[in-house]
Image (cartoon, rainbow, N blue to C red; front, side, top):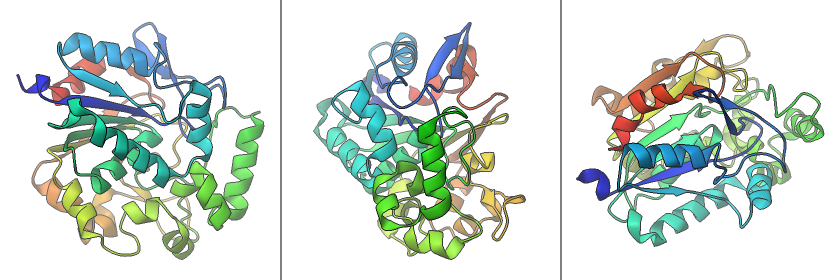
Length: 302
C-alpha cells in the first residue's frame, strides 16, 4: 500500500505562539507552562499521543517526531532562541539522512511549526513532501502575543518588550524566534526589508523561483484554522490572511493579498488546481477532538 512506502513527519515547535497538548476527555487542548516545563516532541500526551494515534489508524506507517535539540530542555529553549533558518537547515539535514523517508513523506506542523515546515517544503525538495498540514500556523506572521504562555510569565514580558521595541534589529532577528515571524502592519517596509525568515519565505523582497516551484510540488496543502483562537493575532494568518497595511483592525484574506494576486508563491495556481484545502475547528488554539482528527486528517496521511 502507498502508506507503507512513505513516512510522516510531525513537527511541534514550542514557543510563545502555541502550547503543548493535554488530553481532556477526547479533546486535545493547548496548555502552556513556560520555557522549561513545557512540551517536547516525544511527550506521550502531545506529539507522542498524535504519533501513537496515527500509527494505530495507519498500520505500518513510519512516523518521525522531530526534536530540535539533544534534550527536552534544549528543544524548548531552541523554540525561543534558535534562529529559525538554522532550525530549518537542521530539519532538512535530518530528512535527507533518514532512509525511511527517501520515497517521500507527509508533514504536519503545529502552530509555529506550520510555517517552519512550509519553509522545509520550499527550501528542501528532496525527499519529497507530499501533503503539508498546518494546525494554527501563522503563515503571514503575528502582530501580538496573547496568552504567551501565561500573563504573569517573565519570559513573555521580556519577549513582548523586545518585539515592541526592536523586533527588526539584527540581534533580535538572529536570536529570538518569534521576531522572525513578527509582521508589523504599521511598518510594512521595515518588516519587508529586515525580517530574516518570514519575509523571505513569503517572497516579500524578491521572487525565489525555487520556493514557488517546490511548494507547488505538494499534492495538497491543508491549513487548519481555529475559529476561537486566542493565541494567534490575527487568526486570519492561519489561512494566509493578515491586517491591512497601516492599521491593526481590518484584515484581508488570502485571495485579496498581493501574494495570491501576483501568484508570488504559487498559491493561486495551487488553489485553482484544487491543491489548497481550508479546514476549521470551532475551538481555541490547537484544540480538536480525536474524532475530528481521525475524520479530517487521517485520510491525507494514507
